[in-house]
Image 1: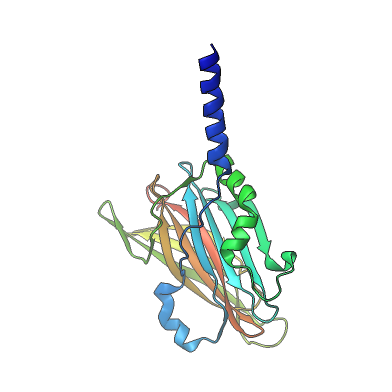
Image 2: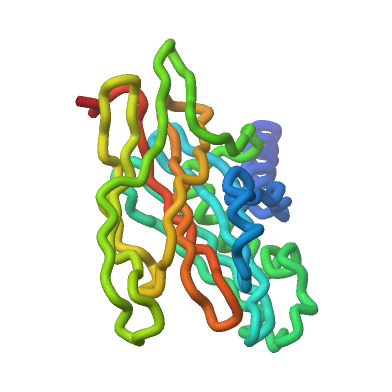
Length: 243
């Protein structure tokens, strides 16, 4: 009985240790790499980078977006878990180096992740996110099961901006995925910034557990020191919903 008790204690201690251990941030990914030709004509102020932390087997993905803040200084991280079925963010954590009196960017992004290790670990665990999977970021088209899938921006709407700086800014758009001669709208979008100038389909990630992708769209918006990117994500099951 004593041996059995000690074994149970060891198992639970091991589980606690695994959940409490320090997470190693996954590699950074440039989500604009397949649109890189556009950069030659852009004056960029903020070019965020991404990390894909992991996936669940029920349509969830954990990722983070990070960037050095021009003008103000410091570093920002947005850590989110997205439900790719509903496209709802079900967990969100904003990490700002200013909250730690770091106005010059002395903390690295890895330092900031370490400060919030317990919150990130708990969110990953409670959403059944599996770490350590391949997270290749790829350009369209996607060839799968003898079907060619492609991503498109359709039905953009335009308006004059309220500040009188631009004659035309993007007010709305839709994200379409085609499967050979079939199609499916996966998102009707309102840009993050009211000064959004261009929209790009940038690529996709394929879930390691499901026949599902996460489509990445880039919104280029005007900023005080040049353009900045806002990334948007939409889920798309590759087997259902096409007409």
